[in-house]
Image (tube, rainbow, N blue to C red):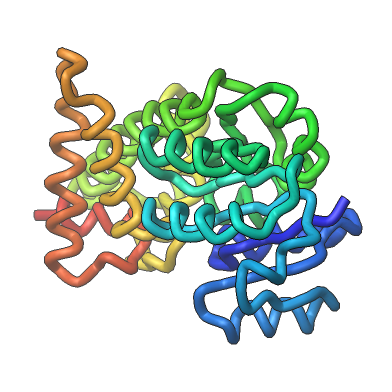
Length: 283
């Protein structure tokens, strides 16, 4: 199996390395060409300069930022991939974007999986991501050996778009946890509690969660290296908002998180980790 990988950011680059470790990686591409050239030289694979450089790939993995990026890449790949190939999209985009991408590729008998991930940069680096997949099950069966190189869990959630719908639910929970952890730790600071005692105590009880474990100590030291950028969280929350519109549900967590991350961007913290949210909670 020959695999191409497009999008070599904080998540994509370590994921591509896991594919390479299994002897599957053939070509890598990135909007910034120098990044693709550097990783290709490191791993001894092809540095793609256009979609044509992926023409011989059985599977192409996307890990990009925006809906427009996904559609741009899918449009180009639809013209060059052979029938029976599969495109796996690990980006977080709208359900409708996933369906449009699948339709474009299906017209050329190319499979598509919307397969957003959760687990953060740590999950990508450790090969322990949770992957939520929408699409045909036989398409997933063909692509599973690739996804399993960097995933701890791969779950088929249903038809095309179900992966992105699951990621929307995931991001509601993430946003709410972030809000609670940052408010709680800001209160802990105000009360003069010792972080070296507070954090392990919280982690030993019902308040334990991934965000507190991975970001609690760093945010209390005002270290906000991403991680997951606040600007990306705001983008995801806007997708969640669009999916939830018309549901009739009370989405107060999303409303608060949207306002908070928009304010972080206004303060110039869009490239900071989402844990920079604590700077707002301090007042």
